[in-house]
Length: 252
Image (cartoon, rainbow, N blue to C red; front, side):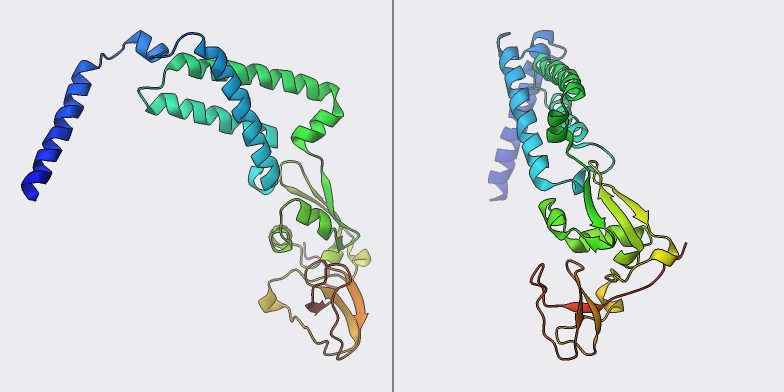
């Protein structure tokens, strides 16, 4: 068995050695076009456009969270160019001229789309998206958050990083087109009662209400006045869990 493996290994090494010896290094025709005709460059341009559209659709579907600090369009260009550049750098059978055609096609496409976006607000909204208000007057715009493929737990984590303890501290929160969140706060004297967004181990949650008080839905932040013993589904999101509202001020 060991002898058979040794024979296979020697044959493989011999094959690789023969291939390496027969391949001419710095063969400019192989490096530029390999075995493809010059007409293939036009097909490369079409393939680049096709890839561009596919990546754009994917990024649109997956939402903004993965494109922090860059616009969706910039991420699209980087991903498409990165794939082309990586192939030509690592694989000897990938000719260079088709990759150059990819870069030229995407560069021209980028300049064209940037020009069109400067003249069409609708196209800019399609490619870059619009800023979305996700908290207004201390209340979470839950439906908009869901439409952006972002859970309330992810969003609350982002707010906690910015020092927010409860939603009543936030006058306005805007999800920007690059995935970041812009926050505008109430002054301390204007802070409202709101949903505490601290982790669950720091906030009591109830399905059966223990005392008469104001309670906030732990999912969508809707506030209701509930009585002891109530088992209430949230009229906004049908969630069954509630927590007492928080009136904590911001600590700056």
